[in-house]
Length: 335
Image (cartoon, rainbow, N blue to C red; front, side):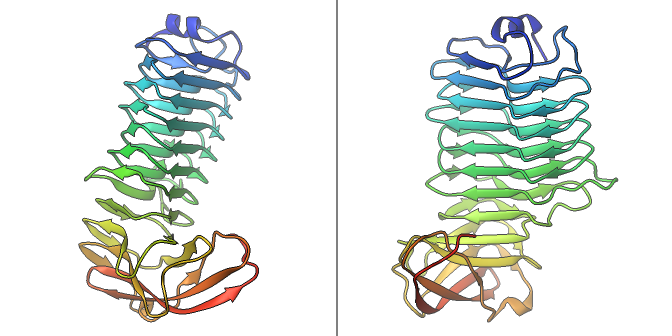
């Protein structure tokens, strides 16, 4: 932490349920609340909100920050058109869990450093979220946990420009028993990714694959994709035969992964026999049994609709889904 005097000016006493708005040029670190800077390091920052509004310019931003033995939970940073030259943490803990913290970025915002929903040096990072609907950002991590699990975190991207990597959960404990599992990355709308961007469900730990899910609802191009047990392709209703959902410049290994396909809408221009490209890459590594198998159906729609059945197939650099049948249904449950 750079500047305690700046914190004192920009956050009121106590670490609970504060709302702090920054709408001027601070050019230094700002906090929704912190238990540091001469206060009791054991006072947990809980349910604080830091809003960085249009026209504001700051260093790094922390929704809640503890440098002692306390949890950091329920804190939020909203970047509403402002500029952050450093990092953004929804919540950051030193010796405690980071749970349920959040970062949102929208509008014409700029974040030059990495974005982390929840970070802990000595604890678990669970249930943290990052939501990007606009702006220009670098790398995005649902959570970091140096010595324990990073599980159940979520990233949602529906707009903006992302130049760095996107990782659901990250643990640095590569020799112990920590896991980076059950994290989710959801992409929709019209975001743009940089030529070196990787999409990863988890990194580090003894398990960084189990339960990690990629929900893809719009065509995107990235450098790499890895460590997802579930690939859910929600095909846009306007997607036509031959179009590509996920373009990857590196090889993609989907061995053991479950491939699920559905239509994102109540209808589609696809007909029986039409084939779409789910993944196009420099080399597809897949189970032989995937060829000719039926994709598990997913739907994200309500009311009367058509259910599309898909058969999967592969070649050296592609994963395909071919419409094998279309059925009418009067009720479809969400997944």
